[in-house]
Amino acid sequence: MFRLPGDAYVYAMEDKLTVALTPDFDGARITVNVSVWTTYTSGDTEQRMIDFTARLTATKDRNAQLWDLPTLTTLQSAGLYATNTSPTTVKLVGHISSAALRELEELRDGGDFHLGLTHLKGMLLDKQPALRLHQAEASAMTIRVRGGGEWAEQVQEVTNASYIDLMIPIIDDPELATAAARLNQARDLIRAGHFNVAVQLRQVLDPVREYYDTLNAYKEATAAGVKPKDRTEVQRFAMVVQSTYAWLSSYIHDDEEVIKGLDMDRAEAVQALGNVAGLLYRMGRDKRTAGTV
Image (cartoon, rainbow, N blue to C red; front, side, top):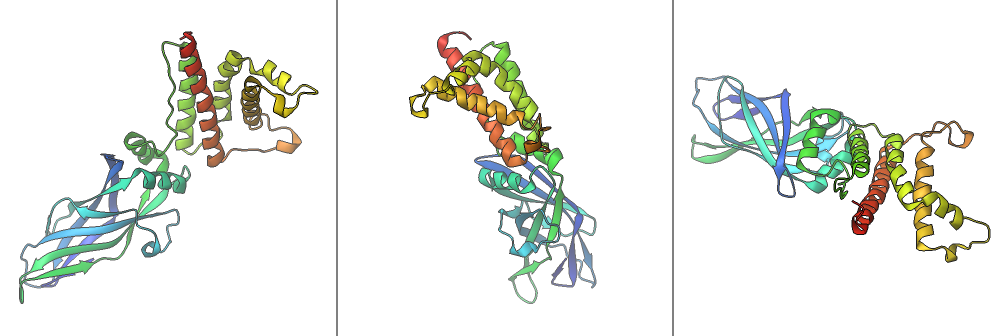
């Protein structure tokens, strides 16, 4: 609530806050819509034009001290608000960087989070008793953001903050197309908060293992008497592929005692997605170079 000269009060409705992202250079434009209205307690009902500013913060804890949190961005009203006794939507607009969006994705960890609106100020020119700039400040407000729904879709549209960009060269190759589709499925699951993507990613490795014949190369690399320093590049690469395959298998066949109940968290899922995407990218490049796609 703001108290203005002439005993006019501007109210902002916390339960009517909404947020939207649109593409912008190196990040996104973030718009917070605030529903406000004005009441008058005296005979002065003169309409006033107000310019709003605010700071935006983020937290997982609904009860966090918003004023102590780092500022994501500064918001400013897209236009002047004309005081009105009926609810009116004020658009607060700011720029949020790709780095900040990545931090938010880490913060929400696939779930919901809260955006905090602090230092919400209204500024206007007051004519009485003399022309001067008047400024009023409201208490902090929070917006609960459903991370697994519309927010995640908006983040995906405006930046690559919510996933690892997958650069898979595909030239009319059904095998590569199927593998890339599974990568995309795994990425979407991670973005939605479902982190155990071992099944999808292990399937992506099947054509990689076949193309490079990694199982036989791995057996040669680990044969008795072969020293690590004597392993060829092909053998070392095969060990990377087979080790990744075995690692992913541990999240699928977790009935063995030493890995019983093993489950992926977000960090492991992102690591696995990056590892497998890189291996598929290499296969696509090598097939293109060899003229087999």
